[in-house]
Length: 191
Length: 191
DNA sequence: CTGGAAGACGAACAGTGTTCGTCTTCCTAG
DNA sequence: CTAGGAAGACGAACACTGTTCGTCTTCCAG
Image (cartoon, rainbow over all chains, first blue to last red; front, side, top):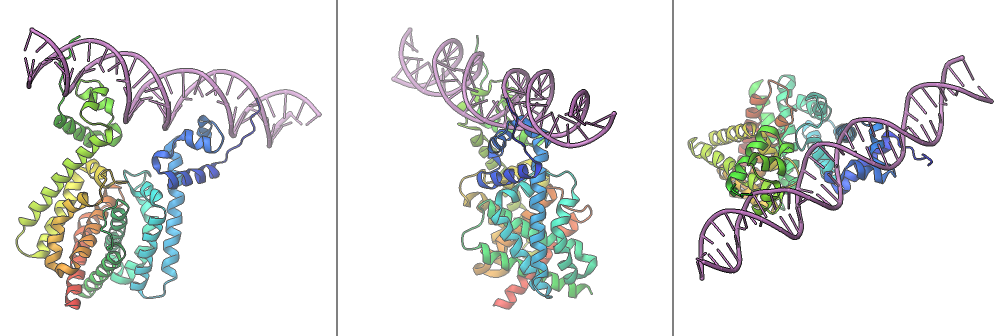
């Protein structure tokens, strides 16, 4: 028999991402992926030691996509911190709603990544920049956590179908506004 | 052979909850549950048509436990809305950190429950009461979503290991504070 | 007392992640 | 140019999963 087919790591990750987004995490099985690439499942293990390693690669790729989108939204929205915050929030939400399965893979359950920091640091870096403008360096870390928590929680609830219709967009902006106001007041009260 | 053993629905749910919390969702398999109850796996299907139905029962039980805890925290914290909010937030976070696997089952991924409303309504009802006090009935729904989003997001990030050590408790209270201030200001500005 | 419902059993099916020994392709060192 | 070895595809197998089905047993109600 002739062994022609040849798989490379990157296309494997791409195919996995597409399958994930189109049919959900349960559809992403090694045999299914192999079939899509016209290869046997066992061959995939020459490129990733285990399924979780492949999913990690998918997650990492998605993470960078999200981070790039956020940074772009931040720098492309002027100097005003409030406006930056609103732009970043909208971009975050839009990305998550555009790639729901990928977002759930990233943050949905027990960490698919190992280290606590790099995953979050990458995505929260743009928020830290804005938070620093709003409340100064001292409180920036805590403010970033608060901002990220709100945005992340809102998106997760939305993805889980726990948002009453009609509320989503306005509620999101309102919440962001309230947090920003709170941050401002806190800033004033502290310095 | 003698068929003595007898399983009842409720203990099945309890055993499943314990196994979930102690060994994680991956350990909860029909055969594993059956073994814990000294029964064959196929017998479980006389009590739940499918595994997801069993998990739904586990989730519902957890949901009521959480809701009860929240309501208790609210009514047991005086008349001041801000104080109620802080108490409810702390109770929410404590419950989630105490039953992480159960919390992830409830909210971690694609809805395990079918309807969008009842799951969330049960847990967000106490928040709605507080939000109404803070911003009035008109904006209460949106404010509730914002509050819930923050608390939920914070807990999810904490469970995912995305919180820098040291920040958690203070960051949580700070964020709650900021949201409350934002709500107050919004209240003043609007009426 | 007897029949039927409820429920436990064991075997089986399709699907999963993963491992292993074999075969083939291709690049590189002599 | 040729030999060898690394990289990689293959197919079978293992242990596990959720789920179905036909058979057997227990027990309660008419």
